[in-house]
Structure formats: structure tokens, C-alpha cells
Amino acid sequence: MEQKEFAVILAQALSNVASCHSQSYPQGGDTAWGKVGASYLAFALCSLPSQVLRTVQYQAKEDYGPVILNCKWYDSLKAECLGGKKSIQTILPGPDGTHREATVTDELFLEMLDFCREG
Image 1: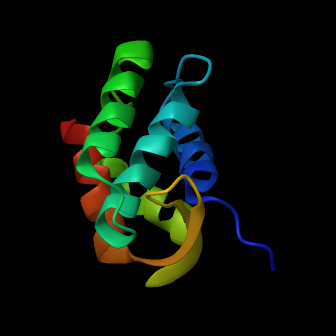
Image 2: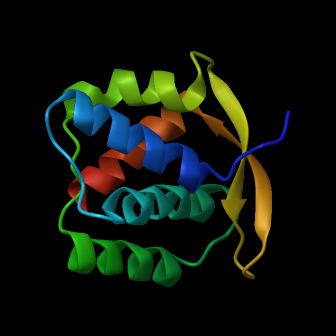
């Protein structure tokens, strides 16, 4: 099975879960916040520099406003992104502009959601 970039998986999940709660992202907002989440994971797993992570984060917030995310939605997001598993293999951005395969655990996934909410 071909792996998707995690940013795409997260963007779709953010959009779906927000929609289930009668909220929606502006055009491109879910994609921008999906990239923020993937960048956080890449920072934790693939040596993405913190300045790159912060740039992606600040740009998403400036262009699209804060992430639309309630901590009560975490279980739904985790189920959608991880498929009910404790971890998944996915594609994350690498520090050199390439893509890297990495294992995202459910604990790291929840940490990433906190980062997005607090950012």
C-alpha cells in the first residue's frame, strides 16, 4: 500500500472532524495546519530544524488564523489518522527538503495536536 504524506492525512482529518462539529477551515487552512502537524513530527523524528517548524507554524496562523481544534476531538482525529493502531508508517518532511519515512506513535500524535492547539 502506498504511503501518503502525513500532512495530507492530517489535513483531511482536521477538515472532516471540524465539519462534524459544524466548523470549517478557510480555503487552504486545513492544508496549512496539516503541514504544521507534519513539521512538528518531522522536528521530533527527522531532525527538521526548529526555525523551519516555527516558520511553517507562524505562516499558517498568519494566513489562516488559529487551528480549529478542540481537545475533545483528539480521539476522533487519532482514529482517523492512525486507523485505530498504536502507530503508523508515514512520510514526513526531511531537513533537506526531501521526504522521510517515519513511525508516528499515538503518544507523539497527541503531543503534535497539543503543539498545534497551543501554537
